[in-house]
Length: 140
Length: 140
DNA sequence: CTTTATATGTAACATTGTTTCAATAATTTG
DNA sequence: CAAATTATTGAAACAATGTTACATATAAAG
Image 1: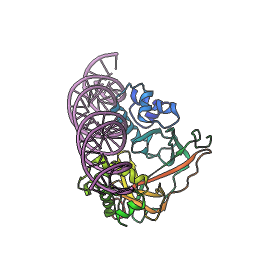
Image 2: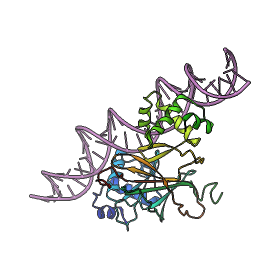
Image 3: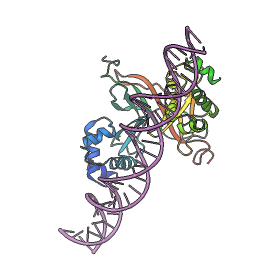
Image 4: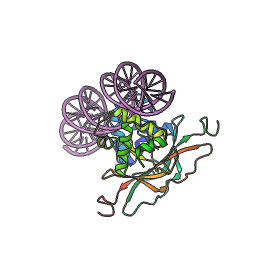
């Protein structure tokens, strides 16, 4: 799907920086960090623009942020089929060695039981370990 | 258990700042942020000391850090019975309204299936929503 | 009590993210 | 297609969280 159409479909104004942001994520297939995204955009836009776009596009359901830990954040496009706002219904994997992050779209997040009176709004699951390409993993 | 004994049991040097840190967490019953902990310690120690102690005590299995999101981190003592290094085998709940964080010790983290060749080292589960004391929750 | 090893404070820095306000670009309207 | 309106962007400054290097202070061992 073209960046233009994604923006139109979610009722978000088409601007060059947003189109570039979406393109960067589409090119990669994997969630990217701020630096990786802005590198792909050739640093043509300010950091503050990046953050504002992330917020806008995330609120409109175009992408989601993946918090690996307090110092590592990644961003990924939501699947186009799903229309949910908080589309983080799947598990994320983070490789401690190479830093690669993977959306495990096939692995749904479990429904955990909460104590009486608690209301769930979202559930973030991040699995950390070694990916199949890193020593210690499968192909070590 | 007394801070002194906890430190001895984990083979960590007893210093005033570490004892104060553990006391602060013991007093609270709930995971605390850096500011909350340092407030309880009356800002008697430098931020850098706090961070170094968090690292040391976390590596020795005395406490664990809970990453709520990229800007909110909490710290909690590990259960004394469990001797594991990465003692985060339970789910964490974070109230979006009041910011309170709760270790759901009774709720174990599910074993999620990983693709061939991936190795799990840890799995962080953070549930966000409203706690029972906040409007919108049970007692609203 | 002295020695040795470790912990601490100071200062400086790095990264991530936000706020304010003026300038600019994208829609809407004529 | 041009003018007006509205939303987006950039610049500068700031805030929060976390780290590094080195000199000083404190704990544990002898």
